[in-house]
Length: 405
Ligand code: GLC
Image (tube, rainbow, N blue to C red; front, top):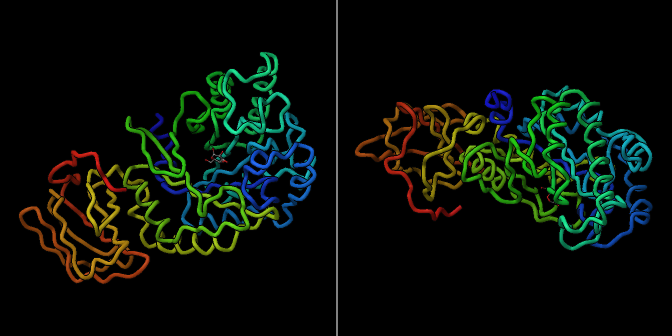
């Protein structure tokens, strides 16, 4: 059942993460309140009040996400600062009562649905603004011993559940609930999960609630679960999640393509982040990079969507290698300088062609060696699609554990 239920996720391989909130007004990342020990009152005065969302246009975000080739989006409905982006009755510290003066979540859901994208909510149980939250300025996350007392813990649990109920019952179908933190521990995640399943049957939930989950996430690294199962790597485009005006450590379009393909090769998704400014605009540099990736993806999509787990090991020229059904996709993100010799494929090759323009690629195959010739390369990379007989298999399985990725 879950196979079918989450087919949108397995098909997608690429999603948009959006970190946006009062911290965007500080322009130095989403942890600013904690790192700089800013009291709630001062944060409200200096950050929340300057979080205006004046140019917020979720239809434009959604159009961009589509153009970039993403199939779903996850937006921070509430980050650790405790400021809710929707008109919440459970949390008066929200975007209706302060800052923008309106619900920012509903237009988001409507625009992304309208654009045919799957919708996800990021939600952080950790809440630096809650008087019941142990230690908003802790350098480490609080642990289960840190609650003031049991009634404080209970109030906290009731409050975050009330917020989740609003998120899960007000906005129609939500596809993905993306928890951050498992923090603090013992927030009775299992019972919360039962409620979520009742409010939103069919929603995918990640593994950060401290309860059973549908999707395992890894952060700033590609580390699929050894035990198998659905997974997703989330990554920043520079080195911050929330908007940081000074951070120009951007990944290149080719870096992003390589990350996306590495996820696809390992049978998982890439959730790639943008951090809009306080007015709602996505930084120009992010747009430029993602436009270029999107252009590449339009021509190479077949090698990414619904990819299977690849059984192939690495080589120094065609990597990553993705696999789907009886197709193998050799990605040349570096110039093969005219030809490529692959000593790994056990299947007979039926045809070889460039994925971007469909033109055929000259190949010869004998004694377990496949040679591709007359390869015309261009940046940021081209893909050769091989059609093979049967399910793609390597000549020998990789048995060593050292794989340089
Ligand atoms: C971390 C950070 C947070 C960010 C998240 C995304 O847990 O606390 O700021 O939202 O990673 O995965």
